[in-house]
Length: 192
Figure 1 (cartoon, helix red, strand yellow):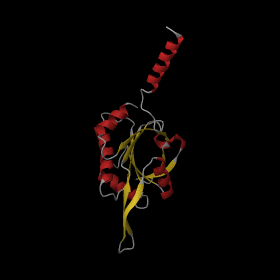
Figure 2 (cartoon, helix red, strand yellow):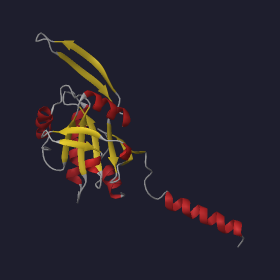
Figure 3 (tube, rainbow, N blue to C red):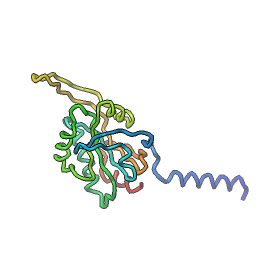
Figure 4 (cartoon, helix red, strand yellow):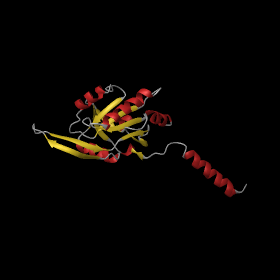
């Protein structure tokens, strides 16, 4: 066998071994966002989740439709896993002005998810805006109205997204949050 053929076979085999695992879409290990969970406790993303796979969704509690499907889908992923192990589950609001830790706690409780391993997270507006930009979640106000009380009611158009992040804070999969079957995400979790 010629040296050229041997070299070609080695390169081909090396490429196959490298591509066997899931491709990494982004690496969040170079950033850190200070968030607050539904219990008022400080949580650093992604730092506090390193060492565990993370299923991460994006919601706001005043959403009239899709966010409840995203939240339920995250809960279903956990409930349908035979052995969740150390997998963590988090939902981050992109409406921090209304979604305080207390509001997130009530919301989590309404889904039976105010417990370990679920985290419902918020932060100040600047941190949330920076984080949403980094994870490519688009948010735009679609409707607003001044109420008699002087408060403003509004709805948001937004990305429908669940991310799967590996134990090294690398983004591995990006799914349609409300429509991806839990079994598909569970199958991908098992590849990590």
